[in-house]
Length: 229
Ligand code: ADP
Ligand code: ADP
Image (cartoon, rainbow, N blue to C red; front, side, top):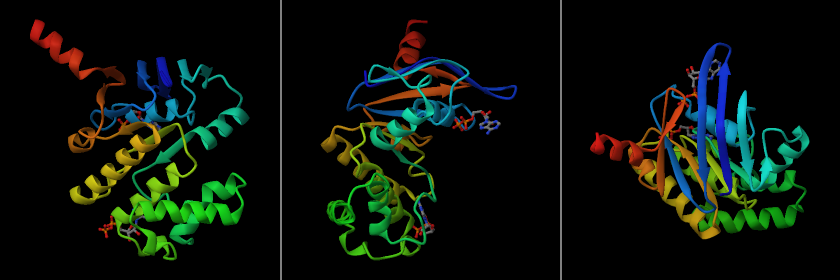
Protein backbone atom coordinates (compact mmCIF):
# COMPACT_ATOMS: atom_id res chain seq x y z
CA UNK A 1 0.00 0.00 0.00
CA UNK A 2 1.33 3.46 -0.83
CA UNK A 3 -1.22 5.47 1.13
CA UNK A 4 -3.56 4.38 3.86
CA UNK A 5 -6.19 5.91 6.16
CA UNK A 6 -6.98 4.06 9.40
CA UNK A 7 -10.02 5.02 11.46
CA UNK A 8 -10.01 8.65 10.31
CA UNK A 9 -12.46 10.98 12.01
CA UNK A 10 -12.81 14.70 11.55
CA UNK A 11 -15.46 17.23 12.59
CA UNK A 12 -16.04 20.89 11.82
CA UNK A 13 -17.21 22.25 15.14
CA UNK A 14 -20.02 19.87 15.99
CA UNK A 15 -20.57 18.66 12.43
CA UNK A 16 -18.93 15.27 11.94
CA UNK A 17 -17.55 15.08 8.39
CA UNK A 18 -15.64 11.77 8.57
CA UNK A 19 -16.35 8.85 10.89
CA UNK A 20 -13.69 6.20 11.29
CA UNK A 21 -12.90 5.98 7.61
CA UNK A 22 -10.49 3.28 6.41
CA UNK A 23 -8.96 3.29 2.95
CA UNK A 24 -5.87 1.55 1.58
CA UNK A 25 -4.59 2.39 -1.89
CA UNK A 26 -1.89 0.44 -3.71
CA UNK A 27 0.94 1.99 -5.75
CA UNK A 28 -0.22 2.82 -9.27
CA UNK A 29 -3.85 2.26 -8.41
CA UNK A 30 -6.55 4.67 -9.60
CA UNK A 31 -9.34 5.01 -7.05
CA UNK A 32 -12.54 7.03 -7.44
CA UNK A 33 -14.10 8.39 -4.26
CA UNK A 34 -17.82 8.85 -4.88
CA UNK A 35 -20.84 9.83 -2.83
CA UNK A 36 -23.40 12.60 -2.43
CA UNK A 37 -22.56 16.24 -1.76
CA UNK A 38 -21.61 16.85 1.88
CA UNK A 39 -20.73 13.17 2.47
CA UNK A 40 -17.13 13.91 3.48
CA UNK A 41 -15.24 13.20 0.23
CA UNK A 42 -13.20 16.41 0.20
CA UNK A 43 -12.44 16.09 3.90
CA UNK A 44 -11.11 12.57 3.29
CA UNK A 45 -8.96 13.77 0.38
CA UNK A 46 -7.57 16.69 2.39
CA UNK A 47 -6.72 14.41 5.32
CA UNK A 48 -5.01 11.88 3.03
CA UNK A 49 -3.01 14.67 1.39
CA UNK A 50 -1.89 16.11 4.73
CA UNK A 51 -3.74 19.39 4.13
CA UNK A 52 -6.05 18.80 7.13
CA UNK A 53 -5.14 16.94 10.29
CA UNK A 54 -7.74 14.39 11.37
CA UNK A 55 -9.19 14.57 14.91
CA UNK A 56 -8.36 10.90 15.33
CA UNK A 57 -7.06 8.04 13.26
CA UNK A 58 -3.88 7.66 11.23
CA UNK A 59 -2.66 8.48 7.73
CA UNK A 60 0.26 6.47 6.39
CA UNK A 61 2.32 7.27 3.32
CA UNK A 62 4.99 4.72 2.37
CA UNK A 63 5.60 3.64 5.96
CA UNK A 64 5.53 7.17 7.47
CA UNK A 65 2.79 8.67 9.65
CA UNK A 66 1.65 11.76 7.77
CA UNK A 67 -0.72 13.05 10.45
CA UNK A 68 1.90 13.27 13.20
CA UNK A 69 4.87 14.40 11.12
CA UNK A 70 6.25 17.95 11.56
CA UNK A 71 4.64 20.68 9.44
CA UNK A 72 7.94 21.26 7.68
CA UNK A 73 8.30 17.62 6.64
CA UNK A 74 4.67 17.36 5.62
CA UNK A 75 4.96 20.49 3.48
CA UNK A 76 8.07 19.07 1.84
CA UNK A 77 6.32 15.78 1.18
CA UNK A 78 3.30 17.54 -0.34
CA UNK A 79 5.62 19.50 -2.62
CA UNK A 80 7.71 16.54 -3.77
CA UNK A 81 5.51 13.43 -3.55
CA UNK A 82 1.98 14.71 -4.11
CA UNK A 83 0.24 16.45 -7.01
CA UNK A 84 -3.11 18.21 -6.91
CA UNK A 85 -5.82 18.97 -9.43
CA UNK A 86 -8.92 20.86 -8.32
CA UNK A 87 -12.19 21.75 -9.97
CA UNK A 88 -11.39 25.28 -10.98
CA UNK A 89 -9.21 28.33 -10.68
CA UNK A 90 -5.89 26.75 -9.83
CA UNK A 91 -3.86 28.33 -12.61
CA UNK A 92 -2.28 31.76 -12.09
CA UNK A 93 -4.13 33.96 -14.60
CA UNK A 94 -1.39 36.62 -14.83
CA UNK A 95 1.10 34.01 -16.06
CA UNK A 96 1.41 32.20 -19.37
CA UNK A 97 0.58 28.51 -19.82
CA UNK A 98 4.31 27.64 -19.88
CA UNK A 99 4.92 29.72 -16.72
CA UNK A 100 2.14 27.86 -14.95
CA UNK A 101 3.55 24.44 -15.82
CA UNK A 102 7.11 25.52 -14.97
CA UNK A 103 6.05 27.11 -11.66
CA UNK A 104 6.24 24.07 -9.35
CA UNK A 105 9.70 23.27 -10.70
CA UNK A 106 10.87 26.88 -10.25
CA UNK A 107 9.56 26.84 -6.66
CA UNK A 108 11.51 23.60 -6.23
CA UNK A 109 14.62 25.48 -7.37
CA UNK A 110 14.98 23.76 -10.74
CA UNK A 111 16.96 26.02 -13.09
CA UNK A 112 14.80 28.15 -15.40
CA UNK A 113 16.13 26.61 -18.59
CA UNK A 114 15.42 23.06 -17.44
CA UNK A 115 12.02 23.99 -15.96
CA UNK A 116 10.85 25.63 -19.19
CA UNK A 117 12.31 22.79 -21.24
CA UNK A 118 10.35 20.23 -19.29
CA UNK A 119 7.22 22.39 -19.31
CA UNK A 120 7.47 22.55 -23.09
CA UNK A 121 7.87 18.77 -23.40
CA UNK A 122 4.80 18.18 -21.24
CA UNK A 123 2.72 20.67 -23.19
CA UNK A 124 3.71 18.89 -26.42
CA UNK A 125 2.72 15.59 -24.87
CA UNK A 126 -0.68 17.08 -24.04
CA UNK A 127 -1.19 18.44 -27.53
CA UNK A 128 -1.00 22.00 -26.13
CA UNK A 129 2.46 22.80 -27.50
CA UNK A 130 1.40 25.90 -29.37
CA UNK A 131 -0.36 27.39 -26.33
CA UNK A 132 2.75 27.85 -24.15
CA UNK A 133 2.88 31.61 -24.64
CA UNK A 134 -0.82 32.24 -24.02
CA UNK A 135 -2.34 33.64 -20.85
CA UNK A 136 -4.41 30.99 -19.08
CA UNK A 137 -7.41 33.35 -19.22
CA UNK A 138 -7.47 32.75 -22.99
CA UNK A 139 -8.00 29.00 -22.59
CA UNK A 140 -11.22 27.03 -22.64
CA UNK A 141 -12.14 25.28 -19.40
CA UNK A 142 -11.00 21.94 -20.82
CA UNK A 143 -7.65 23.34 -21.96
CA UNK A 144 -7.14 24.99 -18.56
CA UNK A 145 -7.74 21.66 -16.80
CA UNK A 146 -5.32 19.84 -19.11
CA UNK A 147 -2.69 22.45 -18.24
CA UNK A 148 -3.52 21.91 -14.56
CA UNK A 149 -2.97 18.14 -15.02
CA UNK A 150 0.41 18.82 -16.66
CA UNK A 151 1.40 21.13 -13.83
CA UNK A 152 0.38 18.55 -11.22
CA UNK A 153 2.39 15.75 -12.86
CA UNK A 154 5.49 17.60 -14.07
CA UNK A 155 7.35 17.18 -10.76
CA UNK A 156 6.83 13.39 -10.85
CA UNK A 157 4.53 12.96 -7.80
CA UNK A 158 3.85 9.47 -6.41
CA UNK A 159 0.22 10.31 -5.64
CA UNK A 160 -2.10 12.62 -7.58
CA UNK A 161 -5.09 13.95 -5.64
CA UNK A 162 -7.93 15.24 -7.82
CA UNK A 163 -11.04 16.87 -6.37
CA UNK A 164 -13.85 17.04 -8.94
CA UNK A 165 -11.31 17.72 -11.73
CA UNK A 166 -14.05 17.74 -14.39
CA UNK A 167 -16.73 19.43 -12.26
CA UNK A 168 -16.67 22.68 -14.22
CA UNK A 169 -16.51 21.06 -17.68
CA UNK A 170 -19.00 19.74 -20.19
CA UNK A 171 -18.97 15.97 -20.59
CA UNK A 172 -16.74 15.84 -23.69
CA UNK A 173 -14.09 18.15 -22.17
CA UNK A 174 -14.39 16.21 -18.91
CA UNK A 175 -13.78 12.93 -20.65
CA UNK A 176 -10.71 14.34 -22.44
CA UNK A 177 -9.29 15.56 -19.13
CA UNK A 178 -9.86 12.15 -17.50
CA UNK A 179 -8.35 10.29 -20.46
CA UNK A 180 -5.28 12.46 -20.21
CA UNK A 181 -5.03 12.25 -16.44
CA UNK A 182 -5.41 8.47 -16.35
CA UNK A 183 -3.19 7.90 -19.41
CA UNK A 184 -0.33 9.95 -17.97
CA UNK A 185 -0.75 8.46 -14.50
CA UNK A 186 -0.46 4.94 -15.97
CA UNK A 187 2.61 5.87 -18.02
CA UNK A 188 4.26 7.40 -14.96
CA UNK A 189 3.03 4.77 -12.48
CA UNK A 190 1.34 7.50 -10.42
CA UNK A 191 -1.32 6.56 -7.88
CA UNK A 192 -4.51 8.60 -8.38
CA UNK A 193 -7.25 9.37 -5.86
CA UNK A 194 -10.06 11.21 -7.59
CA UNK A 195 -13.13 12.63 -5.86
CA UNK A 196 -16.13 12.80 -8.15
CA UNK A 197 -19.89 12.50 -8.15
CA UNK A 198 -19.86 11.64 -11.85
CA UNK A 199 -20.12 7.93 -12.69
CA UNK A 200 -18.49 8.59 -16.09
CA UNK A 201 -15.43 9.93 -14.32
CA UNK A 202 -15.41 7.01 -11.88
CA UNK A 203 -15.49 4.62 -14.86
CA UNK A 204 -11.86 5.60 -15.56
CA UNK A 205 -10.78 4.27 -12.15
CA UNK A 206 -9.64 0.73 -11.22
CA UNK A 207 -11.86 0.80 -8.17
CA UNK A 208 -14.48 2.98 -6.56
CA UNK A 209 -15.31 3.62 -2.93
CA UNK A 210 -18.39 5.44 -1.69
CA UNK A 211 -18.58 7.95 1.16
CA UNK A 212 -21.95 8.33 2.89
CA UNK A 213 -22.41 10.37 6.05
CA UNK A 214 -18.68 10.35 6.65
CA UNK A 215 -18.42 6.58 6.37
CA UNK A 216 -16.64 4.70 3.63
CA UNK A 217 -18.29 1.77 1.97
CA UNK A 218 -17.04 -0.58 -0.68
CA UNK A 219 -19.78 -0.91 -3.33
CA UNK A 220 -18.78 -4.49 -4.14
CA UNK A 221 -19.05 -5.57 -0.52
CA UNK A 222 -22.38 -3.73 -0.30
CA UNK A 223 -23.76 -5.41 -3.41
CA UNK A 224 -22.64 -8.84 -2.20
CA UNK A 225 -24.20 -8.43 1.22
CA UNK A 226 -27.41 -7.18 -0.44
CA UNK A 227 -27.44 -10.38 -2.54
CA UNK A 228 -26.74 -12.54 0.48
CA UNK A 229 -29.48 -10.79 2.48
P1 ADP B 1 -18.12 16.40 0.11
O1 ADP B 1 -16.76 16.64 -0.42
O2 ADP B 1 -18.54 14.96 0.03
O3 ADP B 1 -19.14 17.31 -0.51
P2 ADP B 1 -17.14 17.65 2.52
O4 ADP B 1 -15.98 16.87 3.00
O5 ADP B 1 -16.87 18.92 1.79
O6 ADP B 1 -18.10 16.71 1.66
O7 ADP B 1 -18.06 18.03 3.75
C1 ADP B 1 -18.49 17.06 4.73
C2 ADP B 1 -19.34 17.76 5.79
O8 ADP B 1 -18.56 18.72 6.48
C3 ADP B 1 -20.55 18.50 5.25
O9 ADP B 1 -21.58 18.37 6.20
C4 ADP B 1 -20.07 19.92 5.16
O10 ADP B 1 -21.14 20.82 5.28
C5 ADP B 1 -19.14 20.01 6.34
N1 ADP B 1 -18.05 20.98 6.11
C6 ADP B 1 -17.10 20.92 5.15
N2 ADP B 1 -16.25 21.93 5.24
C7 ADP B 1 -16.65 22.67 6.29
C8 ADP B 1 -16.16 23.86 6.92
N3 ADP B 1 -15.07 24.48 6.47
N4 ADP B 1 -16.84 24.32 7.99
C9 ADP B 1 -17.92 23.69 8.45
N5 ADP B 1 -18.43 22.57 7.92
C10 ADP B 1 -17.81 22.07 6.85
P1 ADP C 1 -15.30 26.77 -21.89
O1 ADP C 1 -16.78 26.72 -21.79
O2 ADP C 1 -14.80 27.75 -22.91
O3 ADP C 1 -14.64 25.43 -22.01
P2 ADP C 1 -15.43 27.40 -19.09
O4 ADP C 1 -16.77 28.06 -19.16
O5 ADP C 1 -15.30 26.09 -18.47
O6 ADP C 1 -14.75 27.39 -20.55
O7 ADP C 1 -14.43 28.40 -18.38
C1 ADP C 1 -14.59 29.81 -18.44
C2 ADP C 1 -13.25 30.50 -18.18
O8 ADP C 1 -12.72 30.09 -16.92
C3 ADP C 1 -12.25 30.08 -19.23
O9 ADP C 1 -11.96 31.21 -20.05
C4 ADP C 1 -11.01 29.67 -18.50
O10 ADP C 1 -9.92 30.52 -18.80
C5 ADP C 1 -11.33 29.82 -17.04
N1 ADP C 1 -11.01 28.56 -16.36
C6 ADP C 1 -11.70 27.39 -16.43
N2 ADP C 1 -11.12 26.45 -15.67
C7 ADP C 1 -10.04 27.02 -15.11
C8 ADP C 1 -9.03 26.58 -14.24
N3 ADP C 1 -8.98 25.35 -13.78
N4 ADP C 1 -8.09 27.45 -13.87
C9 ADP C 1 -8.12 28.72 -14.33
N5 ADP C 1 -9.03 29.20 -15.15
C10 ADP C 1 -9.98 28.38 -15.55
